[in-house]
Image 1 (cartoon, one colour):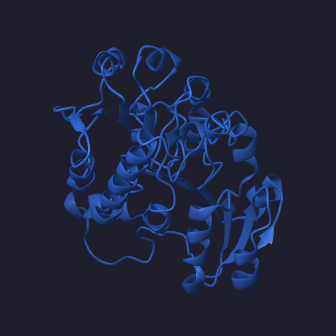
Image 2 (cartoon, rainbow, N blue to C red):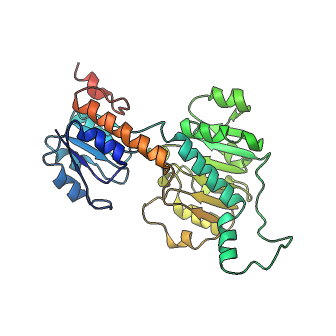
Image 3 (cartoon, rainbow, N blue to C red):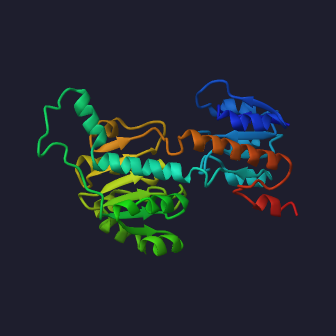
Length: 324
């Protein structure tokens, strides 16, 4: 069968696919336009796509031979899963494998904002460092502070567990109780409002859904402490970006660390110009080890789907129930 890969991924995944099928990889290192994806899928049975690819109903309906969609990401809000399910097309993602890498990046952002690492680096490179001073680059302490986890799934849990060295108090919001966090860290499940009002650091780990769109807006940002720091490594639209810019400008909160943005890859100029925010180019899973594992997982999902089997990480299992 024929498979289209929308952008180059680690070679391990491509090699595995090529052992079994004909594979075409986008030769250009850029995000494809929707019409380019539609053109490429006209004779393809498999699509291995990225979270930056808009795989909506139009794309799916325009691919007559399509049998499997494998998303190279844990999130899949870029895909119209309903439209795929109606066509009987399995959709898969790559969960679990990027848990630690993303949690590590969240910690890197937290530490960088709290201790003003980026500001300090610029300060030194610009030749402004004239010697130690008692009030120079004062930041926020971490040890013994309260960490609020919004969404205590795999990544939120990993982030919280890594806080043990800092003896932090853990608050979390989740649909279900997290026994691991409660037993190991004495974590407490609370409402979002209580978490925002009580936490020194708030880290977001929820998927983007209708319920979580702009979960953190002006109202929620005003609930937070003036000394609090917000970290987002989930999806940009979970935060109302305009409200966040206002909060950072007017110092409703102390700072923020962002790996994702509401209208990626666009980052508002107002955000870029602020000193109290650290920005990353969506690199939560960007380690050699993690991206290679993701490529293999996406390839294995693809191969299973093309065999007519349920992929290991299928997000729309209803497709297989309807086949029985």
